[in-house]
Length: 474
Image (cartoon, rainbow, N blue to C red; front, top):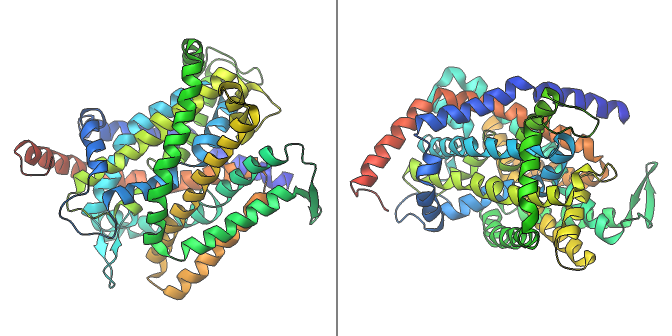
């Protein structure tokens, strides 16, 4: 197992090297310029569109349901565990680079949502099909269909073996175990390895719940997400805000720590300094930030394509709010809480334990209540992420093999099986595998976004002109 972990780590470092980080950030910067930094100028309009359905338009779900489906797949362990692991690996400065990646990532997400609607197609059953594979094939041309298939293969791997299943259920069971059996006193040996009863029972419960819901497809997933996601975001952000408010005097020092660390002005664990610290912070922050908000991965446009709308730009604006909510709000709250508590610097803590320690430090409640609150938030966030990524990966499968119900049913059971085995893998290997698939997905998608940036700019200009003239709904 140690040899496998070393191999996965080595591959992860290659995939998430400087070239990919530059490519993703450069894409966001280029798109920001092409659309005139729309993520700043029209954020208010995007938030209004998010809460109001379009009066006319075709699709399977409302724009808000499509956003909630996308958020169900993004607001998850990345916000709670991902931020913690980023700060533990790259120091407090990783939070700064997460924010930078998110700011430009909003432009990336906008372009993804816009192109998803513009190039979506309708299948024989009247269902909406869209996402990177369709805007690569229909936008860039048939000669690039190989690139679309490459994206679908990587997306399938991400859903089945990375961000969609294993990382999420691993996060849930880790959080539950930290609360119910932190000393791992009640264990059982399986295949020579020792696991707590909490891990086994919670993992089995999550697996059963996932199996009951994923069989229902996008409508059932969207219905569940529409209820759970907004409620959990309010509860979690409210908890983080309570930490910030009750420790308001510590905020300035925490911000200074984050900025200094981001530029290598503060050493991190291991004594690294200077440029090495900056690169480690940048890599950890960008990788975990993209894991969290998925800007550039190409996952969100798969859900956006199902929205009932006739305006690509409008859906682009709604899709863009996902990154704002996920990273600018939720991840920032998590990061500041961890920095103020100093939990990232404790080598004895890993994963969800870091965030749990920060909540225990910051919330004005007894420790067991704070830990329970975080555990419940993480469980619901991660659960909805599992549901959302099932839909994403099924769309990737359909693009590769066509609409074959029997194949889809077999895949759903494989997906459930991946959820079942997730709790028994090590945390480091799980997150490195997820990083690898994320990075591989991003490459063909970012290439397509850059190639189609002219279409994005043209559609944006046309919509804003019609908006100003009162020809589209305000």
